[in-house]
Image (cartoon, helix red, strand yellow):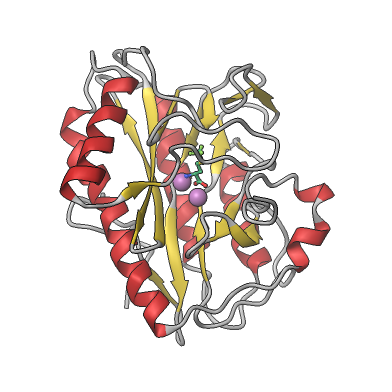
Length: 288
Ligand code: MF3
Ligand code: CO
Ligand code: CO
C-alpha cells in the first residue's frame, strides 16, 4: 500500500519531501473519535501495569494486552501485521522495548528481571481512529541512572507538549526536548520521531525531538500528532537488529521513551491519551 505508511520512519535528513505533505486538520467528528481511541490506548497501559513485574515475559504482556484490546475494548491492535515500506509485517500487538532497546522491541520469551526498564507502546484502532501512547516501567530495584533517564525523558515529553498552541512551530517542541535531554548529559535519537495520526497510523507531520525554535511547520487548531522522545543515556547512534524491527543503542547504553497523542486546540493543547491510571503530570505543567 504505497503512500499509506510513508511517515513511518523518520530519516529526517533525507526526507524533506515528506515534510511538505499536507497536515490534515481534523473535523469535530474526527476529534471525537480520536478522544475515544486515545483513552482506550492509555487504558490498556492502566490494565497491564499490575502485571509488569519481575518474572513475566514480554510475550505474556503482549498476550494480555492483545486479549484486553480485542475482547474488552472491541479495539484492534494497530501494530499487528503493520507493514511500512521496506519492513516485514510486525508480528505482535504491542512493542516491548527493554533496557538498551530504543523502540519497536518485539515481544517474545524474554523474561523481565530485577532492575530492567521496559517501554510498553500501545496503539489501538477504534472505529477507524488510532490512539498511540507509551510509558516506561522500572522493575524491582532500578538503578539511579535508569530512574533518572526515565524521569528526564518524561519531563522532555511534557516540556515538548507544553509548547503546543496555534502559531507555535514544531521546532519549538524539538528544541525544548533536545535542550532538556542534553543538559542532563543524554542524547536524542534522530532516526525516529513523533508523527501525525488519525485514520492513518503514521502521517504528516514528522515531529522531531530536536531542533530550533521558530522552525518547521506552524501549528493550527485541529492538528493531531504524537510527541514521543527517545532518549539515550549514552550516544545517540542506533543499531537495527536482524529481526528487521528492534532498534537498540549502538553503544548498548540504556534508552527511555514516553509517548502521548495530542490535539492542537484553539488556545493550546489537549492530551488525548490520558486515563485514570496515568502517572502524575510534572508540576511545571499547568493543565487548563
Ligand atoms: N507505536 C509506535 C509509534 O509510536 C509504532 C510502532 S509500529 C510497530 O509510532 F509496528 F512496531 F508496532
Ligand atoms: Co507508539
Ligand atoms: Co507513535
